[in-house]
Image 1 (spheres, rainbow, N blue to C red):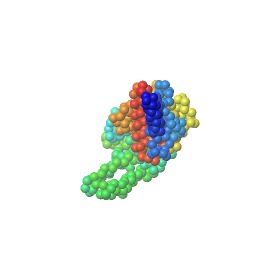
Image 2: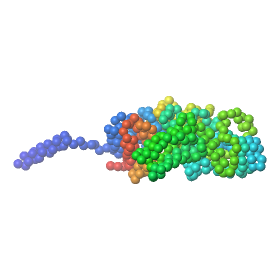
Image 3: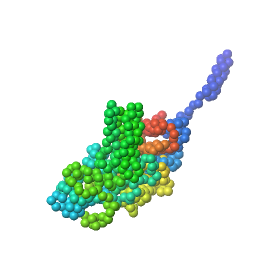
Image 4: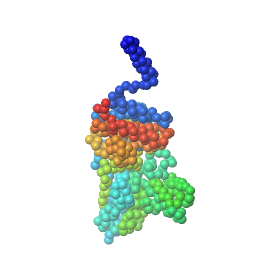
Length: 496
């Protein structure tokens, strides 16, 4: 009887196990490293990425172990991740303490407080004549110090012109392959030897709650832009187009705006040199130093004789380069990035052109093991859609930079998740907040995020996530990137 019972019990158990095997799938126990890779696989397996090209690489900074890779060697559009090679090369070549020097000269004599000749300003490609650096909303604020310097030299009026010499860079003001429909806006501001208010102006349109009046302001208001308006107050909807006529400073404002609405658009300007000189003259006059001449670009006439007779009045020195890089990277400032490539060409190449600067960038990165013909570097900011680089390239740059003598300075330039910069609003109140330092990359149908993540064990991982060609909402892609960062920062090799 006992034997029959045991055989029956064994039969029941076997039948149960057989049915379980047919119904349930037991996942083998994975190591922490395998589990991390599995979880990243799950994140990018969403059907919404069906059309997308996804490239990801994760590597331990300390050991060099590759914890994850997916299309890691595939060339993809980096968008503003292009600023990683740009800023790394600029920091290595120029150093963190480099400062731009803008020289101010006078021609002729000073008699009775009057400069009988011209004021000559020699540009250095300094992008910091901006509200960002002087904790003041008006970019002309810096020219107050210039007015004080002129007065200290006994100058209270200028009979001649204000002449700008912008030969530090070539005359190509736009990046290669930039899309025409974006050229009116501040993110495509032209590059020049002079840069004032980041070569853009802010247009503010305001209506009252009753819809009885409309006010349009331009900041800074120098009279430099010509505003053409065909805009009506409409109770039902707001639909506004603000654009700049190519090769001019004519701004067209078209459409309709609802009562009580406030609309703001940052627009690019044409001719950075004259914009700077107009800003300087405007501020000097406001501060009581009359300028009877006009702002003039030295390229427009033969200025050699005047330049040969000039006398140095003072030198304007910028903030240190490491502080400028923080604005470039944390705010993803395109103008700064583009100007730095040309600056490298001016200092270390044959001229201040993108072509010469790009050679310096590639030569510098070749020290990190990047073969110069293995990626496409077509502009410095990432606006160009002809840039191509792989996650493996970016990880190699970031890992090598981690051990460079300027490595800590570079990491301090990167946005911090949930804290500042372009990821300051992302990953808040998650395990990734404060533990992910990474650069974003954003153009149409492209979202990239590359940088460093600190794990639960305190290990530093370097990573690059690149998403191209997706048609889903950008929020889907950014959520996946954020979840990957959370996986990295919660990763522990000691987990069971």
